[in-house]
Image (cartoon, rainbow, N blue to C red; front, side):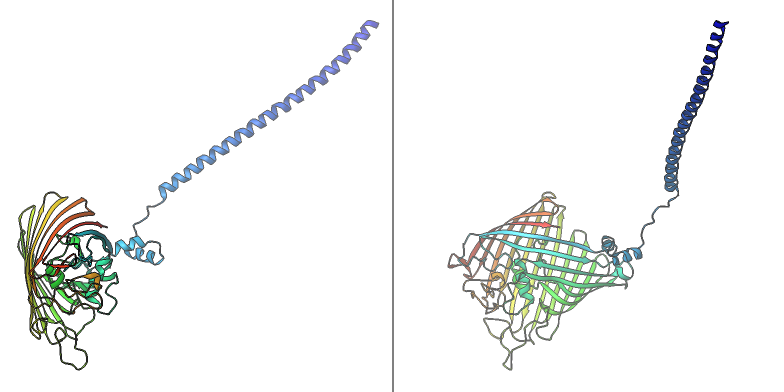
Length: 474
């Protein structure tokens, strides 16, 4: 019994411990299971919430992408309002039709006579001998009038500003104040225009405009050759200031007429007006004929009460008439012929109080080998019978334009010319590696029936020059 009691007692103790251990294990096991389940549930909840957030975000963006309407194109009025806020200037520039362009013109001229004045005699723009010249940097802002439009579309303007040595020449023609002839800044053109809705459209221009007279113009690249002819440089207007009306009757006939201050006069120098006109005919696509001219008082008022002197008679009239005949015998060849005549009262420097006459004839031949290569030839004869147009320049006036043997070294030009007959032949080779880049090589031979050129320091009757020119358009 004693043994059994001990065993029972022992078993009783073991049983209690076993129950307690079992209960503890059970509780611990239940807590562990619940903790694991809670952790698993938490992880699943976080994953679910994250997936829902991602799906919600993607869905909202897709919804926005589907619902958002396209931005409408701005109207003209909206563009104007935006410009006022300084946030859409390019749009207004395009909307209003503004155009900006220009070019740079640089050249070198070698004079084989090596004149001691370092000037090419009787030349106008290409005056520097044996040296480089920054001829022109031109900026042009314009809005061409559109006759097919309405309202403001019919209005336009042009402002063409010149910088460089060529501006000295054009400025001298339009500003006669002493000491200003060498300023290298000049407005070549500055005008407004409007096309009236009359018939095919009547264009009215007011301001300073390139002249209707002659074939050549101020800008070298717009002419067949680098240098300008005697006829243009010495005997024709560059610009006119006034009002001009132009009308195209049909594809064959166009006419222009203007009332102006006079040749190259911004300010009216004699309180009189001149008239200019142009009649352009195109009877065939390969033939063009233009007739041009002007008439009016061009000389300045006489100073004080003294009698009118030569070239200072505001009552004297200048009459000019000429023609431009353009022929295109082949697709690669163009021929231009220009006969010209001018006569002015009380303008002769050799016959006193007599009429001065100057006239000429120029012919041009242009042959295009390719779009890049072309050859140009100009032949010309120019007669200054009254000595009113040639050798009237000064060495220090307008860059030395229109000088001859014995030209004054200072002061104003126009102290008296030399009656003479001039000839010139000009050969020009042009190469355009790109549409915006023009290069030219030119040889020119000048001759006179008087010794008006300089060979070193000696008078001579001829002059030879070789020029190289580069023009960049933008």
